[in-house]
Image (cartoon, helix red, strand yellow):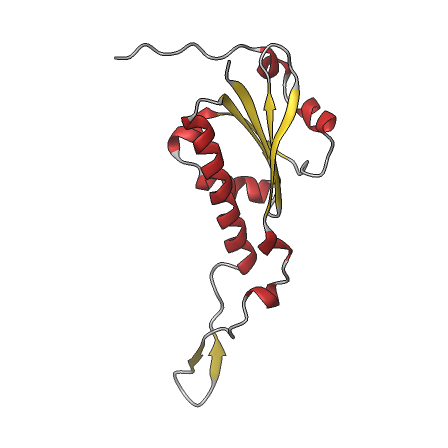
Amino acid sequence: MPDTWILVADHARARLFSLEHRAGRMGELESFANVEARTPGHERERAPPPRTHDRLGEGRHVIEPHTTARDKSAAQFAGTLESVLARGLDEQRYVDLVLIAPPRFLGILNASLRPRVREAVALKIAKNLVRRSVSTIRVQIPRRLALRGPLPQRAPA
């Protein structure tokens, strides 16, 4: 019987859990680390930022990037996590998905989800629980979600 998957993540680390329907048991399936998130920003971008000349005179100015290196790293990490979630959905390993992440990373993660994975999201929790115990994370999941059976399969049209 397909379970509920729970992804607990931040920009540097993620843990994927499976919550068995009916029994309510929760076990960790996999953990992920974003190595680039632990690298200081000045080491991530060794090239100096581009410069532009002033319209009048000899002045030069640095062109600031629109996206920081940290945000780029977080977006790439979210893409990696989305691939894992999409594969699990393709393999019918879960029917419901719970996303738990700090608000900023939750937005990045949500933006990276494909429509069919986004449809499987049953709950989003904007908290940073990635370093918390399994029991602390489990308390955040509503009982109605943990104990319900899988959704009925739709008849083909």
